Length: 249
Ligand code: SF4
Ligand code: SF4
Image (tube, rainbow, N blue to C red):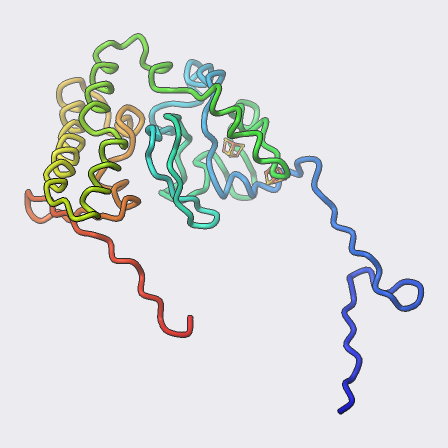
């Protein structure tokens, strides 16, 4: 049986002797301000960004804390990874991955005062960013260092419901240790009641809670394989069933 010739042409077409020309892939070497990075994630803050809090560019309304060992879902490939340190991030717009300062068609709303990571980010060499974060991440202590009462609240909260403790309890539960349920419920309860306590006792605005205490454990526990359902005044802990893929998918 005779096969017809199969030709694969590169965008450059063919060269001498009808051989396809080599493809030339242009690697980006400078920023064209396309805004893709601002839509896919918001920056983590460095110590030098403290000046942006002092000048009012950043505030508790636009930032939140990722706590040590918190599990974070990447918007890019949906993978989950564990944070190896505490750091502070700019919030996403309406719960999405788009930076809260990003304006469609206009770009960054605080471009002249954008955080250090935004100035340093090169989408063609993203690995440099994590190294810098490890050394110079802005932490809650840098922001609230002069407010002893808040530091005490933060320390107590970490002692009672750190992600290390939560991770350990979730692993024990997954292995069948039913005693771990009580430990998890204690952590959820502490985290849930610490928030209105801060609001009522110290007049802390609700918008500052995710910066002071990190995101609510009732939400972030999802990345540990469990979800929390509220029924009346009670919270119920349920495992998240892995998605059952339809045959042939
Ligand atoms: S760093 Fe890259 S993705 Fe971000 S705006 Fe510049 S070219 Fe676009
Ligand atoms: S602060 Fe500005 S430059 Fe940085 S991610 Fe947000 S919109 Fe982009």
